[in-house]
Length: 394
Image 1 (tube, rainbow, N blue to C red):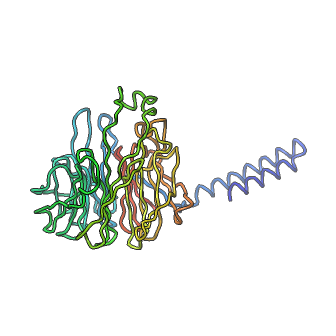
Image 2: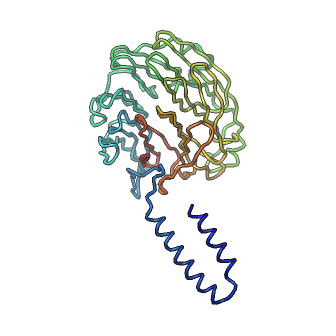
């Protein structure tokens, strides 16, 4: 509206300014009108949804690398990661009980990989050396006797029944709160060398319906002489090749599983599902692929999926669905040929129909290699691997 009014005023100025004197008078009037419009615009409240910075680790000689973020309730949240300074790593958790207005830092004993919560009190943390539990929303952690250090994440359906996934085709189940674990036999059915196979994601939209995803990725035949960031041209020449993508599905709470494998470019890194059958999934690709990522709309009732978003200049690193049906894509703008090396500006897109995507306003300081989303109900937060936590302000 401001631009339209301004264009109209400028058009009048050009039409009637036929003499120097009249131009001076008109310009003075125009400056006054423009000043009033600018002042009114500045005073008007901005009600557009935007991402506001809540926490920013800003130290000269160290970096906080956040690896996971969870909000089991609208007020309580936990982020885990490590403060990196040179070759040293100090594992930490950030805990909030007031929706992110304040964050308390808690020192950890092992490097965290992921966290999962059943409710706002009971949760679990997978580390590089085992599994920990908390009954105080991340303020205190207690190491569990099992399982081994091959895990990547766990998900519990209730206080006793849970699943874990990890390297070497590991899918395990507990029915006594993690005291004992047994392997899920169906996880070994897909073909592929166990040493190059991993299950990396668990999603249960209902207590009975669940999906576990993974992949088999043999080592590349051609060894690179230098890292990607040192030799981007060589990295781009390394052709992306298809590999096996694994899936396990259950419709009876894990009593039985259907295993499948298909050839796929890229890695399925996120699956978000709603109880009504709707969902979205994220596939991330290697540097030599045409797109850094691709987002799929999923109907887990029918198994149908369709591509709904991809952009060469936007590396989507996480996706989210709210109970109301709004979809969010978070990631970073691609700054060069190698999309996963140079930190980029954090970007978030939103859609209510999975077709039209609108870019959201994000705090200008937000730059990272990866962004991750977490929410409770319609409340949503975002963390970055550069030590930032932002909240969606409606």
